[in-house]
Image (tube, rainbow, N blue to C red):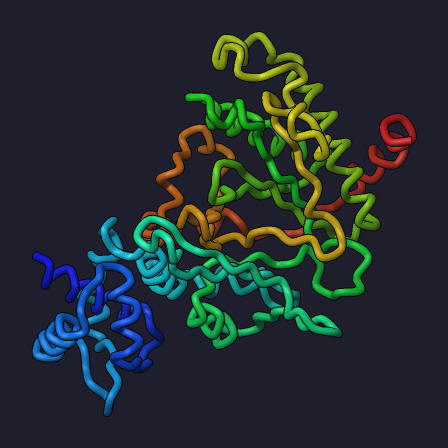
Length: 375
């Protein structure tokens, strides 16, 4: 059994490399020995066995996986005894082959933060080590740009799995391109058995408020963690970053007003897991909103960034997948599994077209309301 485990680890290590990428025996020994204390002789034996099965090929003094070997490693990506970062990178490489045309429009022509994952040295089987990259630490700043499929794969080849674009395309731009509301529950709600159901209720109510009160066509996506985000874009900029943030604060007031008529209903369904008012737009005092749901506007700032639709969450391995507001109450976290997302791609791709809305109604309500709410 130990011999098979060593063989599996060698195969998965090579299977996460870019096509044709060959690595040295020293590299293989360093990584596999770290994960299972395999000796150099055991690793050589495993490599020779993989070569005989045409799963690995030798390139001078280095080794590379064959396409047959890459396919043979599929089941290993779901084996909890394998290195976690390797498993996630393998699945990410497979997943992004299916969605690159969907995610690229949200990355092109704007700075992008990326999260690369590597093995956690203290526990490589169960943990990953994230490396967050917003820009190169030099003057002037050198931002990450992903303007093509080749750019995307260059980052994936470097172990990037999570793509988090800036909300504005130009660095000197004075307004965001997207209107984004991040629905984030306090810890008490998140930890409740039915807290996720309440989060979905508030997300739907926020979506409907935008549509019914302001004639805004919004789009919902799962965050990849435990929350949701609502996106919209307008036919012309709403105003400065501050104006967009004020619009979220105004939206929260309208959402809570609608929820007032549902307090008793929600108490029957969710008992005492939330406080009244249920929602807040106060991003500062985390301890005061443990039993509330935050309508978060904090990404709407210069160099603010937000996880792209279709991106993989580096921590959970789940996809930030579009969600149909009509079916949000039946949405389960498992629906964001990358395999399930790919299986349902033809349906899901129609749910996040992000067509511009006319912002006239919102402007009319926002301007006089600022005097009442925000001065």
